[in-house]
Length: 381
Image 1: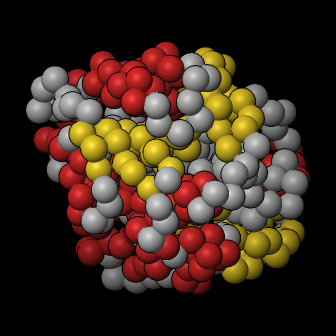
Image 2: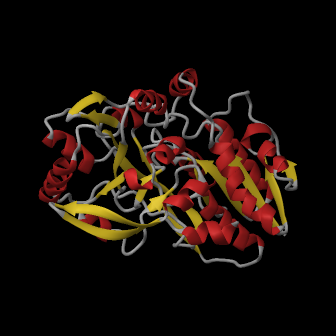
């Protein structure tokens, strides 16, 4: 029987949909809750653990009670042994570390944790390489390479382990980012430490490549191609990234590098918007809506990493045909043939969007590129 430890950071990713670009710090959490940000980490852990519950794999779960694990395990009908509870109603970094230490003492075989880069850093500080881990992505950015591509991918890895299909263990990088600098439009991610992870490369995300050389001329060509296609009657939701920022600059607009901006008629009508603001603008707009989005370098995610303002209901309303993908060929080549990734927080929507998409890679240049990995959803659940 697999002895599986679970840790949920209930507040991971809370700043995403409300345009706070992170979740670190009590003040950020308070502001996010005041803006009505949804708590999604527990639900994403539930999606991962559902693979074990569905397969009826022999497993015993351990962890802290309540929102940090016990509530989710019991809701799925999985056997759960409580090792304690967070010190306060709203758990924090110290609770994550204490939970990891107690799981180590309990002799668990592997720890599944739901969070972001800060959560991975806390666990690395607490246990180092002593216990293998599987990260369930629930944060805003997630630069680290210890996370699965989606909760279902994490569930597939855990299901294989529970069914005694053991995998080699590799050290993968934990990266962290300066959130204050990030909110000011500067990306300062650095190597922090390592965690031990089952080697399932097709299901694990790569480390975010924030230091790659940028083909600025190709970005300008991409921007020129998109600008020729803009329609004054269409509302455009422009996602974060350097390639989309060049597009705005070529229109003579000052948008945000790391947020979502809204265009209509060649003008910036809203900048760095929340999901609720997007919904209000779409509700008042009489006409079509399109999403302009690029991929994260090295990882390939187009939804679910750093752009949670583009919530599942918003993407679904825009529809598959309303999504405009842009990327330089260099960025696509860095994926080494891997598909562009989907993690919208709605597995059914991910399946609907999966397939081949045209990607604008230069001036009047497009390539057809695979998006999503339906094998995860079909196999894990």
